[in-house]
Length: 126
Image 1 (cartoon, one colour):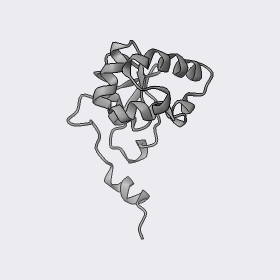
Image 2 (cartoon, rainbow, N blue to C red):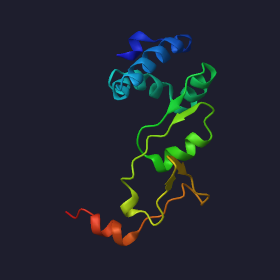
Image 3 (tube, rainbow, N blue to C red):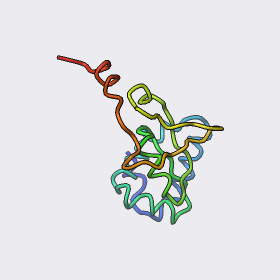
Image 4 (cartoon, one colour):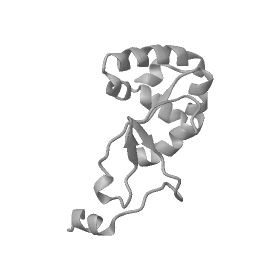
């Protein structure tokens, strides 16, 4: 749907206006459902994030916070890291949240290591 509405990077300010109104009114998920997120996905993250930054558009994440946190750390217009602690039960050292801020660990790779016993406990066996 969005690809019919927005065809060039010059239209990103209009995209920003529509998205910000939706988010302000608690309809952030509609940004995805309306196809606005699809437009940015089609451009690809390596292209869409710099385009958004050049237009002054803030970038937020959706899901996979343990990985998204690292990407947001190096994103010029990083805005909001959507955080869920869903993976915590299977992580050896879950990321800490202090004063509403995630503390990104300085560990190799993505900074996560599986708690093998917990993974086994939650494993679905066919």
